[in-house]
Length: 177
Image (cartoon, rainbow, N blue to C red; front, side, top):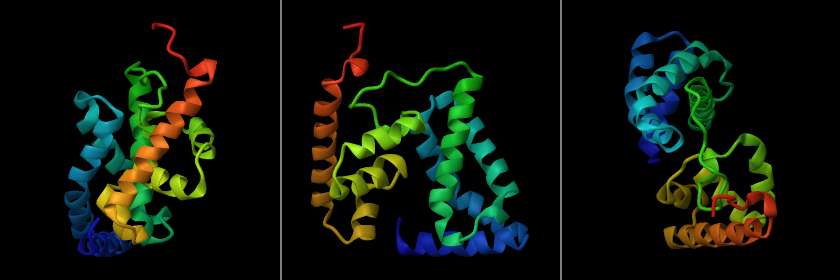
């Protein structure tokens, strides 16, 4: 996320908390494409618009519960994930089988501590920012002041480690193969 996007997000969130309708509209316009992209990673395409609409209903009705407007990106991502899971359950859709190749963000939240515990602190931070919070490699690079190549390398090594660790656990084997 670039600095201008972050500043506008925080400004619109602050003004939205004060009841400024125009700022709410600007916040929705600014974030809807990003939310649609994020939700599409968790849910099938035909549910994306429905889920994004629910995210905005939940977010704007609860905007005053946001303690620090600078935390809006992670706050809205959590709402989007929760709305995605709810929509999947409502439509009786299943998440894909658990596999090291499946991005962590599609796993049940209860699995996240298990996966993150398998990683060391250096890789855990990058893995969490990318797969849990949905930041891009470039955004993580700026946040952590680390070159993008290093971020990519840490993500690659994390996936290899998780694949190796999980392949040794019988409960993670796909019984159809």
